[in-house]
Image (cartoon, rainbow, N blue to C red; front, side):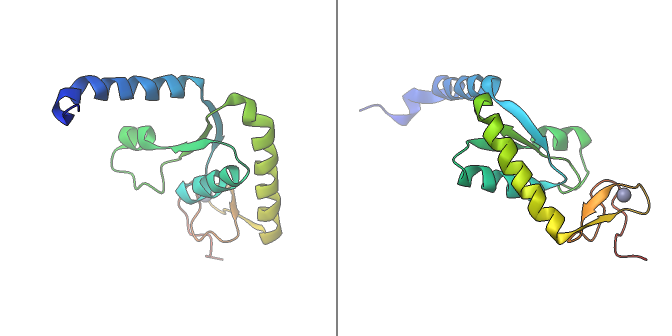
Length: 129
Ligand SMILES: [Zn+2]
């Protein structure tokens, strides 16, 4: 039996290497409005059997003290070959969104889902008329 201690830093490095190897084959698919948007798409992709991940740690570490929901997360596909199916999932998601309507920000002109209270782009209050 191998004692956990003997696995030590070496096994940790192997794990990191495996992660990096996976990342190299991944494909950036979608820049989300916010974390909610990213996870909504992620769940749809997973339901369709597509392996995907949400990354936004890098953005957060660069921007520092910006709240997490302002930093823009990205959805990455584990296999680039899944992109055509992922595009279909995204199209379906966006069609659902159009049904609920969108609101254009008065301050910066970006479109926001009608369910949003604050502009994803500039943070302005969308409910103010
Ligand atoms: Zn705005």
